[in-house]
Length: 419
Image 1 (cartoon, rainbow, N blue to C red):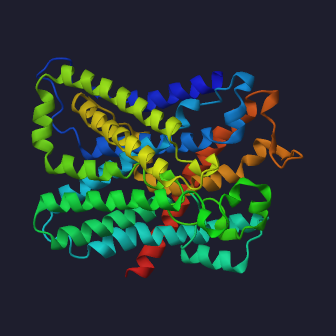
Image 2 (image 1 turned 180 degrees about the horizontal axis):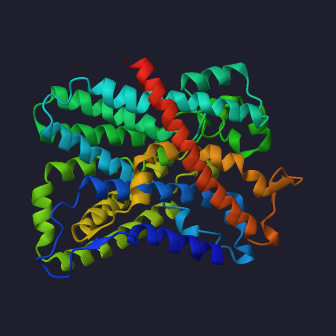
Image 3 (image 1 turned 60 degrees about the horizontal axis):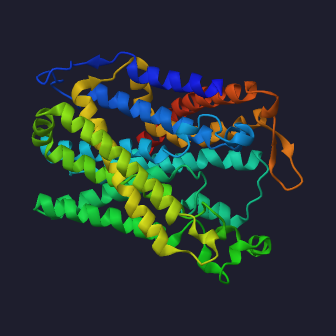
């Protein structure tokens, strides 16, 4: 478990390095809690958190805790959606601030903020991941290749973020261009976010509706299924598509009422801060209760898709994603984190997210040495944690290098396609 503690210390160091504490007194606060440098660093820390979250979900890391369980860097395993909530929060925050401060901000918005920033990088990513599927020896039918290249299905299962962001940005554009009431605009954005949550609850994790009832509970059912019936194929095939995007609305509301919210938190700050900490713990427990009592993976309970249980779990988890970003904002009133590394990661946050699966896949040879009779990969890690440490370091370094190359290709494609 030493590897876990080393990674935890490094992660905390990213937050502490270069930090600036305003002071304990009730009159000591940072003048600009949401400055550009600070928000970039927060995004960078969230990007690092997402990378570690994906690493922690590798089966070798999950099982490395031995019979007693625990795994390696287990603290990152179930909190990936909270790191992504940080991205959604600042996206919503930035949209409202830009709308209020930049004349004619919505003119050309779809080209500049959706096509150029989200759609083009998504399809560049599709092209980059095609060779990875070929080199891995994966056999896909022509129809799957076609759907993957069109973006209807997922060439890169981690590339869901720009899809959801593009939907939310498009909704923002049409709502705030047509609706004069800002309050009504926020309500409509809330309905869009809720609708996305309902889409997942109905859609589930795979095409459960494409065969006989509970066909997926038998091995024969999977063997007889078509390629498009498997997990993580279509859009919104997983709770991770929807459980962090409510923070987008929270960011918009904070931007709209930043002065009033800041002034309110500054009065009796420490009392409100500790109440907020307690509320965060309570809502986190409520989220955990929802996942244990009702659950997202209800397809495997033997009672059909379990749409209602998914929806209840979703509604119990949404408050957690919102309270965490509120806690983040209140911390920023007192403490600013900013250093060159986190700012650098913040500038590459989307790119590292999009290229992380490629790095994870390339270096899996460090963890697995073939297959067991049941088809599961056989890990190297039983001899020690050296391979796990090497894998984690290689994935982090490769993700950054690939992200830089990916950004260069995206910039080239943007210049050509939007000239």
